[in-house]
View 1: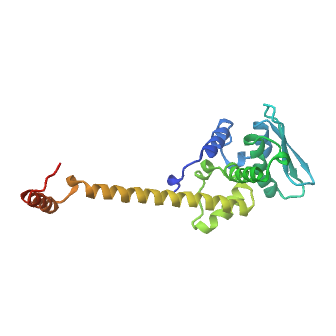
View 2: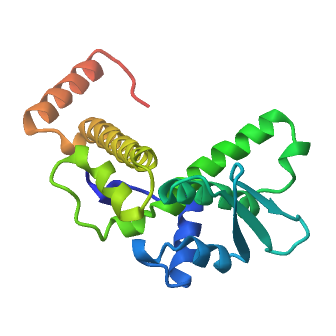
View 3: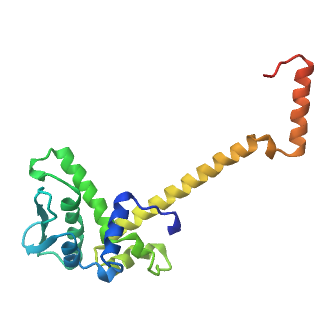
Length: 208
């Protein structure tokens, strides 16, 4: 994959900036307690479904409870998902319409990919020889389930492929404009055009 074609989204850039500002620069730096503290939160572990609690009072305080029954990769997966809610959302989901809840969950799932497997860290890794091994490698390096690293891999690949198509389309459009510009015509085409114009003038066709 040509990573030079990948473009960060505004949210992804925001996460990147926050990490770098706080010296979180390598996969080993992605300690979930350190990240929670960085944003003003805490983590607890209980035998219940992972969830986040926070108050919309202008403070940055929040609490993320992680399901203690999960293995570490799954707890990390849940943490990066739940982290999105206090940082990017307002309102208690119990009080929100289902459509807005669905939107917030979708946003949290995207945030999760950016925060758990940051692109700027990926750029520093030596990738496996074969692309089909990348998801497994990222799962190991970032200590997340392979199902999550696979989503991140396919997300990045889709955006790179889309950028390739966009560039090819722009190049095609530019080629049409170049062909339409008489300055780019060959001498034979210019002469044929001149003779055609001359013929129309001789027939009395007026050009304005």
